[in-house]
Length: 278
Image (cartoon, rainbow, N blue to C red; front, side, top):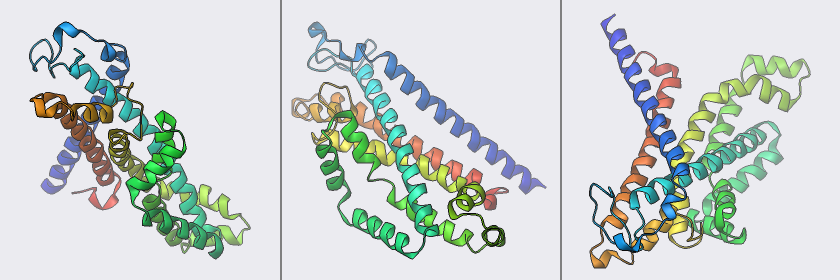
C-alpha cells in the first residue's frame, strides 16, 4: 500500500513538472511573438552594455536588447520545431505503417529509402535540402521535416508488424476489411502512445538542427532574430570580451531543448503501463 502511494506521489510530481515545462515553453513562445519588433530595435547610445538590471542579458554592438532577442529567437525556433516535428511525425506514421501493411515491395522500397537517408550525414542532407528549397523559413522547414522521420518510421513499422499477428487484426482481415482501414481503425489507437512520444522527442532535434544550419549560414536569413543568427554574429565579438552575446542565448537554447526532452521522456513514463505503479 505504501509503495503504491509513493508511486502515485512520484507520478503526480512528474505530471506537475511536465505541466510547468509546457507552460514555460508556451510563455516563451507567446512573449517572443509580442517582442518581435522590440527585438529589432536599435539604440546606439546603449551598445555593448554588460548584463545588469536594465538589460538582463546585456546589449549588442547595435544597442539591441539581448534578452528580447534571445526570447524572440527561441520563440521562432519553438514554432519551427512544432511545425517540422508534426510534419515529420505524420510522414513517419504513414510510411512506417505503409511499409508494414502494403506488402513486401512497399516494405523494401520504404526501408531502402530509410537506409539511404540515414546513410547520408544528417547535417549535410539537411543543408542540401534547405539550400535547394531557397533557404529561409520554408527552406529550413522542408529540410528538417524531410530528414527527421526515419527513426520514428522504423519504430512504427515494427509495432505494426507485431499488431498484424494479433487475433483482432486477423479477424478483421477475414471479414474483408481493407489494409488501410484496419491500420487506421484497429491499429492506430495502439500506436498513439509511440506516435505522441516520438512527436515530442522530435522537437529538440528539430530545434537544434534549425539553429545549426542557421549558424552555418544555410538556414534563416540574418535579418531574423533567430538563435542561430545570434550565435553566429556573436562569434565575431567573443575575442573582444563580449561573452554575454553568446553565453545567454546558448544557455537558453540548451534549456529549451532539455525541457522538450524531459517532457518526452516523462510522457513515455506516463503512457507506459509498466511504469504505472513505479
